[in-house]
Length: 235
Image 1 (cartoon, rainbow, N blue to C red):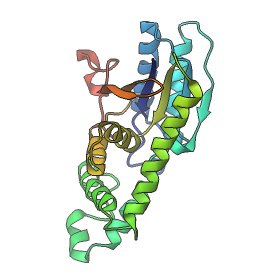
Image 2: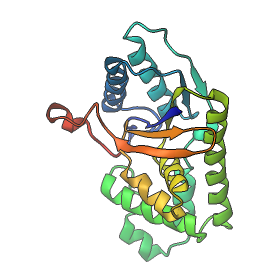
Image 3: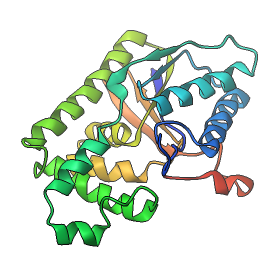
Image 4: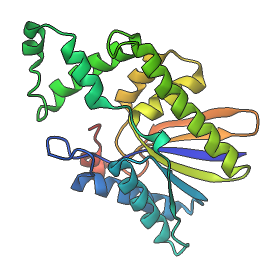
C-alpha cells in the first residue's frame, strides 16, 4: 500500500500584477506544512509539482521543511500536467458570452481586487465551461483537462510503485477533479469541490496496484489550531 498527498499551493498574490507567486502569508502556510510533516516523522519519498510558480514555490517550501529534520532534501520533479486550468482564459470567454448589462452587474472587468465578487464570477464561468456553454466545444476542453490530470496521477503512482509516500503540489481545480473522479461523482461536483479546497491543505489518497481510495480531504493539521486560524485562506 502507498500514500499520495495532494497539496494545494499556498495563498497566491491576488490583486497584484503577478497572482502566480506565493504571498507572504502563503509562504508561511507552506513552511508550517513542511515542518508539520517533519515533526510527525512522516517519510516522504518523492515530491512532484505542477509547473506554475505558486505550485513550485509550495513544493520547495515543503522540501525545506522536511529537510529541517535532518533528512536529505528531496529534489522536486516538475510535471506541467498538474497545472491548474487556465482561469483567465475561461473568465474572458465567459465574459464574452454575457451582455453589457450582465457584465456591469458583475463588475467586469474590475474584479481583480474584490475577492468575493471575483470568486462568484469565476464559479459561474467555470460551471459554464464544464457544461459546454463557452470556449466552443467546452466539454471537450474540460475533458482534456480531466484526462490530463487523471493520467498524470496514474503515471506518478505507476512510476513510484509500492510502499512509497509521495506529495504533489498542485491546485484546487486539479484536486477537486481528481477527488470527484475517484468517487465517481459528476464533473460539476469536481468544480464545486475546487472551491472548498483551502490553501496549503492536504488530501490523502491510499493506493495499491488495483485500487485508489480517498483517505482524507482538504485537511489543515498544521493550521487548524487557535493561534493559527488567521492563516487559513481559500484565495
